[in-house]
Amino acid sequence: MMTAHRTRALLAPCAVFLILSMAALACTANDTLFIRLTDTPPPTITPTPLAITTKFKVGDSGVVVGISEFAAISLPASAGPLVPGIGGATCFPNTRVTVLDVSRNVNDPSDETIYYLVQCSGKGWVAEYRFSRFNRGDTAIVKTKDGSDVKLYRRSDVNSAQLDEPCPNGTEVKVIGLTANPSDRRDRNIYVQVRCGALSGWLLEEQLAPPS
Image (spheres, rainbow, N blue to C red):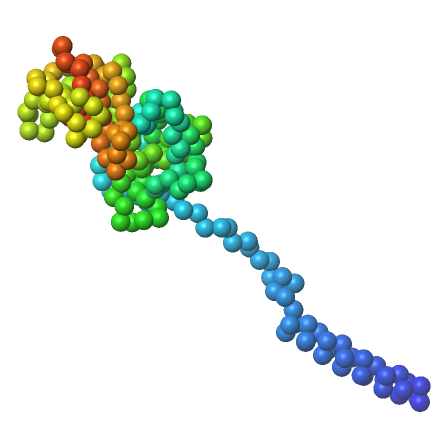
């Protein structure tokens, strides 16, 4: 009897200690012991859906425009202006590529520029003001909004002198050059060099339309 009594006396503190230990473990234990955690994926910036008609749509082709025929153009990895040192791809001027996606600036809602995702050396975004419908060798039609004839610029700059004779509205012309303004990076016009009859000069891409 004495032995059984002593055994129970010894077991009682052990049982209490075990219960208290389990309670403490339940209160302080890391959730990973009882609950399987799901890793939270890092946030991704997705293109902003557009509810407007854009110059190009997915599947269309366009031509990347630079200020030199030989210097590669860096394209940003996300829809927006290029951040120095963070390029998504490089593309040579006058390269025709297919539009993969369309977006506004994903970081600046006040930027009204449209950006197009294209595949060159990799995937990158090109601003609409550096993306043309035409390339050298194409034919186009002179077509102005008010139906007026067009005087050609002598250089790819709206501030340069114009030729005396105009290129009549509705004339089919040959595209012989394509560039952005090499002297003013703030100029967002695309300049197309055309041959209009005996005339040769520059006009704005917006003054041209594809042949019907």
